[in-house]
Amino acid sequence: MKSLKLIALAVVGAFAIPAAASAADAPAAFKICLTCHTIEVGKNKVGPSLFGIVGRPSATAPGFKYSDAMSKINVTWDEATLTKYLPAPMAMVPGTKMTFPGLKKPEEVAQVIEYLKTLKSGAFPGLATTPRSVRTAASSRPDPPP
Image 1 (cartoon, helix red, strand yellow):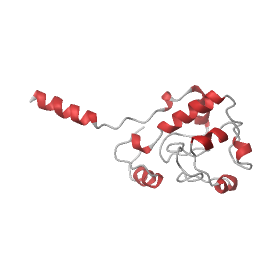
Image 2 (cartoon, one colour; image 1 turned 90 degrees about the vertical axis):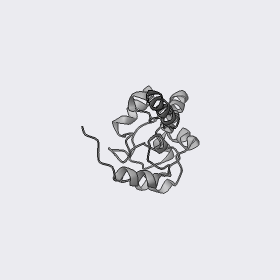
Image 3 (cartoon, one colour; image 1 turned 180 degrees about the vertical axis):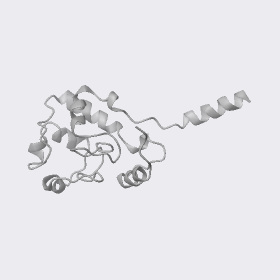
Image 4 (cartoon, helix red, strand yellow; image 1 turned 120 degrees about the vertical axis):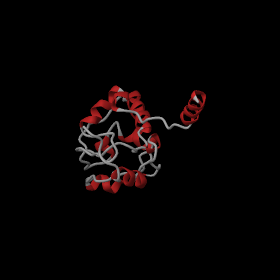
């Protein structure tokens, strides 16, 4: 019986989906982002949640009111776009509400983008990979206890 349990655990473990990165896993350069953003699905602060940002169209985080400027840029937040945006957000999107001056060191930009790539729906069992599915799944789950 014990060997059956071990086999079952091994099979389940082989198909386990890795957990998403936490804020503690973030590079030092990302810590400033947490002043205005969260990495939780559907939880916005002054800025939108950054969960699932890589691959998401601009101005589409659920429940967040974007500036007109951000609503009009019509980009997808991929590595190339983030590489341009993170060093100078206000230059790329004049009129944005985001007043952060940007990350000036290319290595910090690269580290932040690599971290943002880990914040995706595939990291959580039961969530699909599209932003719409993430919004639906997240809104139907209760908040965890404090």
